[in-house]
Length: 67
View (cartoon, rainbow, N blue to C red):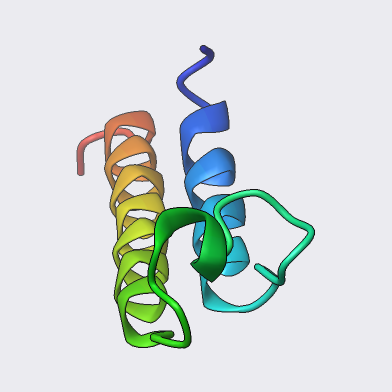
């Protein structure tokens, strides 16, 4: 996988975990045995979004010339 695609994939997965994971979609609550517990998905979504931000910041720091 291209290193530039990692933050995009992480951000999309994070947004998916935070919001759009209803019954017909994969990794929904019933499929993984969480029932109505949305808290675990919220935490996982936030972790994925933070990871995306980490990769974006790290890539920008490496790309910028030293001062």
